[in-house]
Each structure stands twice: as C-alpha cells, then as structure tokens.
Length: 349
Image (tube, rainbow, N blue to C red; front, side, top):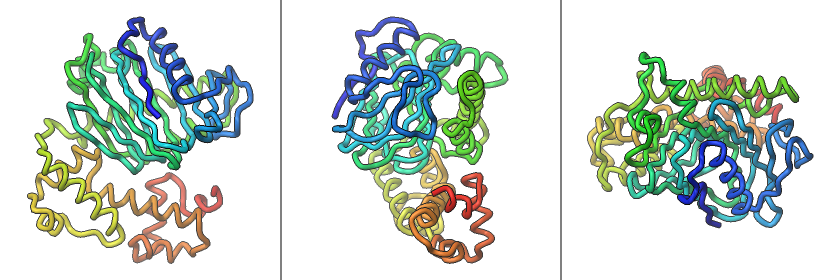
C-alpha cells in the first residue's frame, strides 16, 4: 500500500496543507471519517474533539485521531494494526514532523540519509526539504501506537524566538523559509516523554477540559523533544558514516538485541565488529538516537513488559530472565523507564 502525503502540487498555507493531508490520508489508507465525536471503535484517546478515522476493515483494525491545535500545531494519535506493509512518501515543506512511537516498527528512507530502521520505542524529528524525498514504511501485523506533532513555521519561530534556545540548523533553515536538504534525527524516549505520551493518550477529561489538557501536554511533549535535540545529550556535528560503518552499527544493534540479558562490553563489541570504540559509541547514538546502554535497557524493559503482560511468570524470575540479579533492582529500573512498577503493568494488561 503506497500513498503520498502533501504532494508538491499543494501550495497553500498551513491550514490548507492540513486539509490536504487529511484528504490524502483518508483516501490512501481507507479511513472512514467520523467527525467531532461520532462513535468509533474503543480507543485509549476517545473522540471528544477533532476528527477520528477508523481503518477500513479490509485494510486493518484500529483508528487514527486528528486534533488541530492553535498557533500552527496539529496532533495525531495512532492506535492501529495494518494487515499489510504500507509506505508513505512525505512531500511537504510546511511542517516539521515529530513522531513519538511507543509501539511499532518504522523504516525511514531518503536519498540523503539512506535507510533508518527503527523497531523500538523512539522519537524522530523530520524536516522535509523542498523537492527532496522522505518516505516512511510501516509493517503489517505490527501494532502502531504513536503520537505525531506537525509543527508549522509560526509555532517553531515562537518556540525558538528566545535566543538562549538554539534551534538545530535544519530547523532554523526551515523557520527562515526552507530547508536545503531533508533531515532526520532520532532520540531515545525519556521517562518524561513516555509519561507525557500516556497522559495525552489516556486523558480522563472530556470536551473543553480535554482540549486544554491536550494543548498543555502537547506543548510539554514538544518541549521535551526539543530539549533532547539541543540539550547536552544531543549529538553535535554528526560524523560521516560510510555504508560499511552503517552495516557494522546495525550488526551491533542486532548483537545487543540478542544478548540484552548479558550484553558484551563496548571494548569486546568494537573488537568483534572491527570498529573503534569511539565510532561505535558516537555512530550508534547518531544512527539510532540512543546510546548502546540505553538501547539495551529499552530492550530489557520491552521484554520484561511482554512477559508481565503475556505470562504468569513471577516478577523475580522475569527480573532474572532480562538480566537483573535482584528483583528490587529490576523494579527500580522498570519504574524509572515506564513511570509505574511491574505489578501495575500486569494489572493494566
């Protein structure tokens, strides 16, 4: 299944681009529109305002909600499964897109930055250059739980108007009238981002209060993401990675995924892959938006959550299975990652 989002023939402003995006997505993905709170299948975010779209039964299950917010900022919330793989070509120059993916796998492709395959919780920030190519693929049978922010120039100009907050170069170029080349950056999800995601998706409010809460939490999430881009943990001055470097870094991720319970040291991994440890650490962060340590921890936590939700295995045994000697250490790490303890995860499943 292939589609194009905001084709090059679209030349209107932010509101017109938004309307075109909705029409394109509805046609391409078989969404059945349900305006302003008409009933849809149950979802974690309800349908009190904005528009909801239920996936056509022949294409998948679940729904996608769109919420237009003020000052050049739109929000989408996704909770769905497609039956087959899908690809979306993003041809747009009116938005910077922030995608926070809690569940699901996506592959980003561009002639500028190659292919980036992300199959863990992550956040991506994408800037589309005029006339350049970015495509994003999703995979059939894989549940997608995501929040996406579409940020217009006015919103970003307000966000970075304070000169003490430095916008990344590609975003600054976008604010000033156009990006010269497509740009994609990935960052790992912090506990604060995950907590804000869940507060957005599971808000207890309705009607006017829901809108106020959504606007506040959306701004909070945007602030957390931009802090991740510009803060001390951000990757500055990205190094040039060769095709062989990228292949080795993907292999490093495969090794860490397979051996997450007892991962190799960086020194051992760099010897095994014939790559120096500096390039291994910096290149991994640059390519996947997270450190080797944080990636391993995220895999551990994901596996632990699966075991909590899908089995009756005791928490102590789950802790041991994912590489923790003591259940108390596991509980502390799990709560720091998800914002709640393992027992609560089991109750929520």
